[in-house]
Image 1 (tube, rainbow, N blue to C red):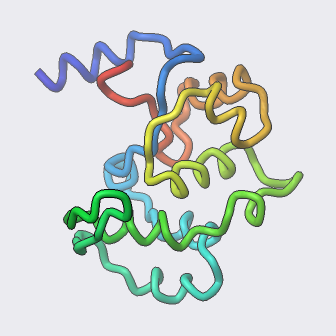
Image 2 (cartoon, one colour):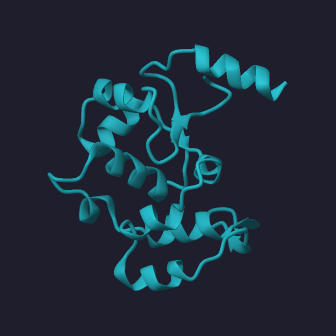
Length: 148
């Protein structure tokens, strides 16, 4: 069944309403090291702690709104809380892919459409769509599987 959905998603063309996210499993499938690309997105004081991270760990986090304790992936929590603010990371020389990747690190990898991303990184949604929907996958940025 998963092969059917994978082949089906390859046939569906993403639109401006398609939501994208970082597919963390892409990094492993491609034999790439996520840590290398993430380091430049972190605050300097957090880079050393992240460099020692080995992966697969979970931590307990208290939801500030509900006070509910949830078990979350340590990597996801670390990225969400230790990334530089978008304004501090982004410059006129920041690539579109890096800016979009940074948005997903900051927002806990919550899926966003090219239109949403365009508003956050001040780039045209159509350009974002062309970049993310092309044959080349950049930094694991892919459509959400159930929407493709």
